[in-house]
Amino acid sequence: MPAIRIAPSILSADFARLGEEVRAVDEAGADWIHIDVMDGHFVPNITIGPAVVAALRPHSAKPFDVHLMIAPVDPFIPAFARAGADLIAFHPEAGPHPHRTVQLIKAEGKKAGVVLNPATPLAAVEHLLGDIDLLLVMTVNPGFGGQSFIDSQLPKIRALRRAIDELGRPIALEVDGGITAATAPLAIEAGADTLVAGTATFAGGPDAYAANIRNLRG
Ligand code: DX5
Ligand code: ZN
Image: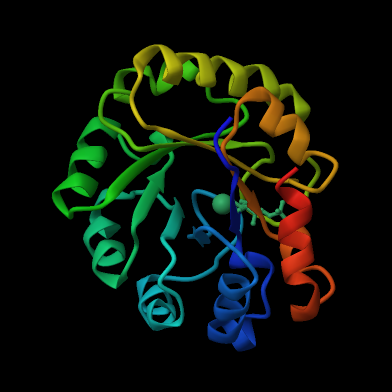
């Protein structure tokens, strides 16, 4: 079993001190920094854009895992790539040609990910498995932190794990939404290798981050 990566979602950080928060979770053992980008259109919330990603870049050398919840997505790929994203994940519903979006991300020299909403089946991304580096499974409806884990997604995580293993390509399998010390083992058991955690990472303030991250690794 590979080591589990933890990707704190900065959606639950103190936005007035975002640079310090990124530094703090980096030092507390985060593997990736998960950055949730929302446009108030694809999802019912608005967060941050490329300028903030660029401002955070000097605060950590860890991979920036940028989760785009925006539509259309293609026009913004270059800006997020140049702002310092390492992985760029998008929802296939955010544009008419997901394969083209993957190519745009690759053309920027970045790792490409696709995200499955709870209602999005594996079949929607099957044609992309030969090209992508990351599959991100939503275990909440995207838009907000602090929601409850939707456990009907576990069979899909298992099916994706099987598909990745059969293909034999290095595709990370990341789970996002409602991850806590109680739900992390369910996601890991189903085959996830990377866990996004917002609320569970940032609970209790900076002194608790290292223990919070440790508790999620299972
Ligand atoms: C939801 C975001 C998640 C969210 C996770 O749309 O994609 O990354 O911040 O937050 P928690 O861990 O609090 O469920
Ligand atoms: Zn996310």
